[in-house]
Image 1 (cartoon, rainbow, N blue to C red):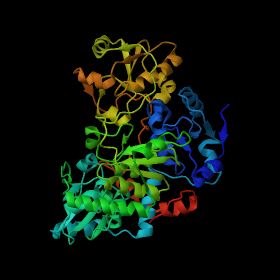
Image 2 (cartoon, one colour; image 1 turned 120 degrees about the horizontal axis):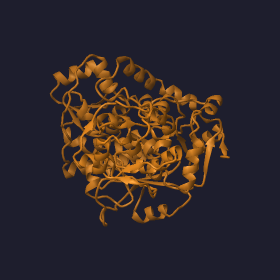
Image 3 (cartoon, rainbow, N blue to C red; image 1 turned 135 degrees about the horizontal axis):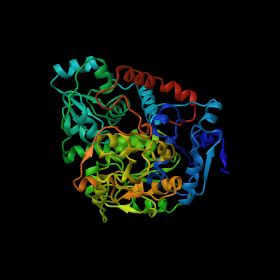
Image 4 (tube, rainbow, N blue to C red; image 1 turned 60 degrees about the vertical axis):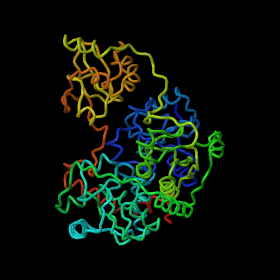
Length: 524
């Protein structure tokens, strides 16, 4: 029997700022329809491959819930096997939260988006509607457009004249991009949050320029019937020393006003030895800088995305966060926002002069269970003889972009239901992008069928590396592809009604925060 935690007690933990991780075990699309404000979506299907980084302290109070799907017992069992010691179930699940009369939020990264709306409401962040911004962009030569999203998002679609300057880079680089105080700066993202936070960051840091957020981002631009650019590659420039010094001083002043604390390497060591609190360590520089050399133990979390996706990076609400940045400004600005969102946040001074680790960030994984394997060459032979059925556990967008020819798309937590749709009389082969998730899922399938499946060595990546062909699309789906929520602010083929509904939802978030009453946000 799993111990129950009442919804009222979860809210009390948030209000009291005690550490707790409320975990929604459903797939992303159902999660995006309804969830509590600080719930973190960590689906049962991916539990082992994400939990160690997202909830690194094994004694963290974890509260699990679903919406009647029966996912909690299996998740609790897996977490106990991994060494987590304080795992309970939300009494009544999501329905219990509803019955308690508590607020439910939609979409993803809801807490960060609600905070962004609160910032605009409190600070009256200047913004321009798309038609006015377009006229200014076409007529004004002394103007720059700074795109605060990830570079990949910027390349997909961007505002004319836009330059990629992901959120945490704005204060560091804006003085270099717009050295003339008379230059007008427009900050955009796909929707609202990163435009608001980006523009207000520049204002908070004391830039003398006129600064505007593009109201409603690329969604607003599209709804106004205006044309976006595609495939652009404008990146931010390097920064002169004097301007970097100005940015560092300005960002430090902002973080001080927000109550951010600074610690040195010795202080970090002291915090790290405290076993009663989770300590998240994030490197807020660009992924390229991180790969070139980072402080061991720090995870790559570019500052703009960390502020936007705090629930993904740090599900344990009430934990401590330490940010690292060898140039200072990015950590201070990111920390200033996290502090206003109610986090106990520190900026690390120093640490980059010691031995650094190299390479891209890779997730921490538990010891993988033993499972019989098959090589890409052996799989190709057996597929040619029609002896096996391949089950692909990749996320549905990844599966659509390319999967082993003949493979079935399956959500791991729904393997039991999927079996009824799969061909009989052949051996099963499990694959996932790098093979790790397939290895964890092998015992699930064996328990259901009574025979051990084969796991593709190295996953689909090894199949590709061996030169074997892929097919695209969702041709054979044994599970509903609701594992990923279709965001109305990403991509280029979103329905007008979906984009407008998303904006209407964002505009209502400030009132919803007031009704919820548990957020603890403040705005400097």
